Amino acid sequence: MVKGMEKTFNIRRADLNDLDALTHLFDGYRQFYKQPSDVEGARTFLASRLKRNESVIFLAAGHAKGALGFTQLYPMFSSVRMRPIWILNDLFVSRTARKLGVANALMEAAEQWARMEGAAGLELSTAKDNGTAKSVYDARNWELDDAYDHYSITL
Image (tube, rainbow, N blue to C red; front, side, top):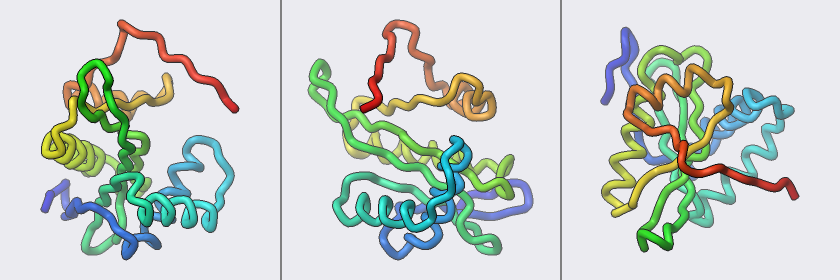
């Protein structure tokens, strides 16, 4: 249990029983990144990840306000280190729960879980102008990579 300002919430690993709550948070997350709302698509996407055990999702839930935020991790492997790495792909806190320590608590849960799993580390990327998120990562001692350039291709 985590106490944030006047609200109390807990962090737990989500499962299919949390699908309704996760769906609305995930749809809000996508809208934050300028995607159109698609509640049914969000539900289908999340259900598939959970049923296939393709990701690990942590959910922040408050007693009074329900679902407050989530983070979703995807597995990857480091050939050089010969160990798993987890991609912290999604982190979102509902507008009404911001500044209560929810993002920090979700990241703490992800970090602890990755350590327990024997991971070499966690990685994430965020928009260059997402100063709020960057301040959370900086406060948690995450390091901004300046050694490698990240490339991608949209298919």
